[in-house]
Image (tube, rainbow over all chains, first blue to last red; front, side, top):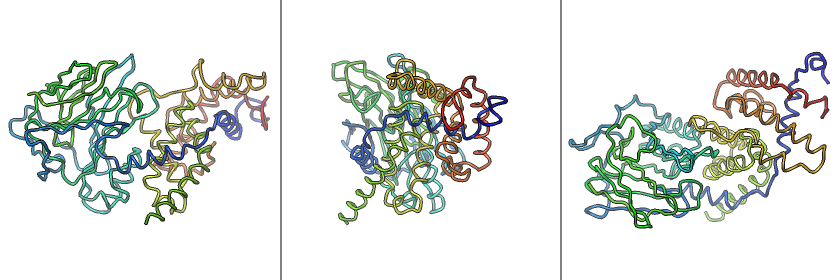
Length: 272
Length: 179
C-alpha cells in the first residue's frame, strides 16, 4: 500500500488503473460479430434514405415521381404561400450541423426523439475535410462519401432516432446530395422503422413533404390512421405532438407519425 | 478490384477479431453496461468498416477507432437522454460472478468502481478511462476526445479527484491487488 494511502486512504493513479482493469475484466467477451459488423458497415456505405431492417418507402404525388429541380439546401426556395418559415439561417459553419428536433414523445413510459441534422455543402477541399472530420466526431458516415472530397458541393442530412435510455442514437435516414429533390403538391417521401431496435413493427414513420403540404395521413395495417398537420409553432417541439414542420437547413418540410402499439406502417399521403 | 476488396475485408475481419475484446472492455468502462458496450463497439466498427480503405492503411488505425468510439459515446450525452449507468441491482456483474465468496467480493468492488465512474460527467469519465485504462498519453487521449491536451489534463484530474473522494472506493484496492 502506498504511503499516501496508509495515511489518508487516498488512491494512487496505479490504484485507479488497477480498479479499472478489474472492472474491465468483469466483462464477458463473446465472439467478435465480424459478419454483422461488415453487414452493418455495408449498409451504412450503400443504403440511402432509410436505414433499418425492412424499409417502407413511399413516393407519391401527381406525377408519381419526385423530379430533381436543382434545389439547394436552405436556399429559401419555398413557395410564397408557405404558412411557416424555417428559422433564420445561421452563419455558415460547415463543420457544425444545423439540428432540428422533428418529434419527441413517450412510449411505454420511455422517451423517444427524432432529430434531423443538416450539414451545409462544403465549397472546397479544406471545408470538406473539416466537415468530414466533424461528422466523424458525431459518429456519422455520409452516404457515398469515402473521402472528404466526395462531400464538396453536397449537402448531407441525417435523421436519428433515440429511444428511452438505450445507450444509442441510431441513424435511420441519411443522404448526401448535390440537390435536394424538389417537392410540390402531394409529393411525399417516407420511410418506416421500428420505434426501437431493428426488429418489431415499423411504427415510426418519418418523411418529407412539400412546403405547401398542410396535412399528412399515415395509415396503419390494422385499418386505423393518424393525421398530422402543419405545426403552428415551428420554433418548438412539444412532447407528444406529431406534426409537419420545417427544419433548419432543409428546403422541404418533415413529418413524423407513430403507429399505435401492435400495428405498423401501411401507407402515408398528403391529404391537404 | 474484387480481389482487393476481398483482401481488405479479410484484413478488416482480422482487425475486428483482434481488437474486439479490448474495445468491449473500454466501452464497458465508458457505458457501465455490457450490452451497451457491445452496441457501442459494433456501431463504431461499422463506421470503421466504411472508411477501412483509408483507415486500414493509416499508421495508427486504432487511434481512428478510438476517436470514432469516443465521439459516438460523447454524442449521446449531447442529447440530454439518460444513458445506462452502473449495472442495476437486478442485472450485470454481481449476478454473473456470484459463485464463490471471493468472486462476489470482486464483483462488489467492480460495482463500486462502476458506480463511481457513472457519477462522473462523460468527458471526465472518458479522460479517466483513456488515460488510466487505455494507458494513452495525454496527447493520444486529446486526439481521441477531439480536444486539447489541457482539457484532457483537467478532465482526468477532476475525474480522479472525484473517484478518490468516493467513500469505500479506496478500501477496495490494495497494493498489487485486493485487500
